[in-house]
Length: 338
Image (cartoon, rainbow, N blue to C red):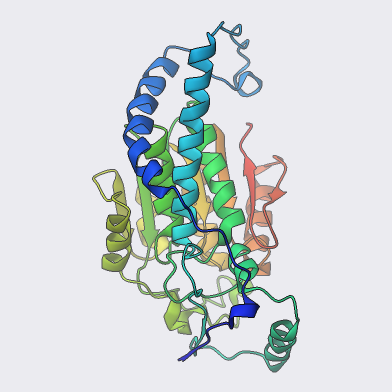
């Protein structure tokens, strides 16, 4: 493994959090008020009438103090979750944990040449690469970048606010970063009941089944050692954020074995990160029928052809027409409307 440390001029200085102690001081307030708000919300009609056919409730009059308190609560939530996201991506720290290593798979010479040209650009910035989720970080707990983390945060906050029924799951978790953020958002919004399911083989990707899944023919993801992260390491990463509890449920094994027993389990958010046609189809087949109306289906690897083909095949077979929205250069999602 070769460690590459960017020179001082190659990485743009990022502002460091100067008031992190306030985040910790306010966190107790966030959680206490969030639980109170959630209890109050249960007495209200859903906030997404377009999904339920219900009429929206009339706007209630709030005093200036109440409005200011709500604004402060949301500000603190955002600051806490921003710190979590920048820690998960390792963007809090300098120098960035950039490295090149043998991933266990052959890299096309054209790809190497394209990477060399990119590194040579005078405005090249590793922080931008990390934010877009385009590298394999050495220490970060996620490789999906800030844009896909922002999308995940918004989706989780929406299902809590709109009281969409069901737990959350990610299929293919690597070091656990996305599921850690799911649990952090639930904590910040005071949701006391939803569980986060962490589904992975914890030993890498399966060998391709060329006969049953021709779209996976030639895949060598199973040879990439960097993609094999143990369950113990993922659990330790949850512990680092103080978020490992009985609402974090580990599902260890190949999706074809672990997901069928979950058929019928209600979900409010399903996040797929299996890279391959087989892994994507296994998750859609076993989980999507139980995704609640108003819930979200997120596909991290949508721009990868085998993954996109699996999504297209499943949607066509089941008549799914909810519009797909791209998150960034790779990920996509849709919200279930029917």
